[in-house]
Image (cartoon, rainbow, N blue to C red):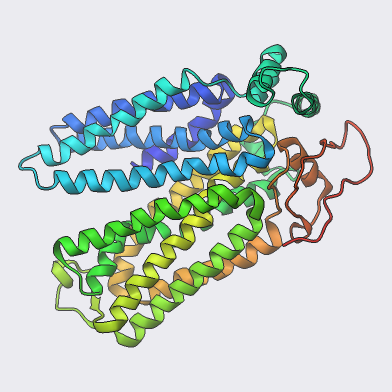
Length: 452
């Protein structure tokens, strides 16, 4: 599945530029349904692997283009909240699928896993049908010279159908200026993402996704049963206690959706990495201080569960694990999907976000191979390692990640052209007209304000 995800993320950029954001997501939904049916009826391992590859391909088309689509149709002051809904939907999907799988595990025969796999097609069908009633991206329409459609779509989204609405008129002016500016360049390719004018943004977008993986959140999601087994839980208690993290993930994403646009991206990321570092170091310290070797072969015959912790320290480890999940859910979870689409200009946004998403899945794939043997051989030091990653990302975010909250997408492009240091940027309470070098030469816009 991870291999298909990597390929799908790269292809999605080309699909998005050719077909548009909406139709690309619909293609992903159809491919997802095909993959889900394939694994649901698979009679052999190769056929199962093929179905998983198809599913991975579909997941990355959608995960790369959904945030692009939402960011291009959302108001600037609501963009974080709306794009963050993607992460909230992911948390719901993870939780629901866990409980479906847990319930089906009590069935006899192959139906216990065929039912959950087959049910995966249902969200794909809902997504495909739902998109039939949603508009296309006005920015993509403008880039294709479909100006009347773009204006009508903006009016429908933000002006109750009134093309003379002040917000709609200002947005159209900014989009027109951006499209005219970008037409002075050749068609976008992946190579353009590494040219001097854009490479800083590419580095920020890619590292947003890399750091999201290196927080250790997916390690926690995939292997929390290992951690709780080390803490002495077993059987249904182990599974149900592990499921609490999924509930926490759903609930704690909600505050981020409500207030992320007010907090800003930088502050959210900085606070999140600092909190996660605290819980990781706490877990590592507790395990280093109170652990003892597990029986030969590991707890329950799992080599990765190579040590145990009992008594009050085990309860503290469980509590810190839950606090870690809560800290991720309210900060890096939604922000890591919201931030990359905001960084790039229209002409390369689809390809850029696809590349950033590919980085996410490369590291996801690598961690899947690293963590089990790491638990076996370096034990509690795994937590210290991920805690150090969180410390590194805190420094990186502070010095390199500018604030984008509250700014129009065209306004963000102007901010990058100004070259303002990241730590001097702040949340914009009201979007201002974009100022693009090469189209005009106004005075420096008021980005240089005190901020985190």
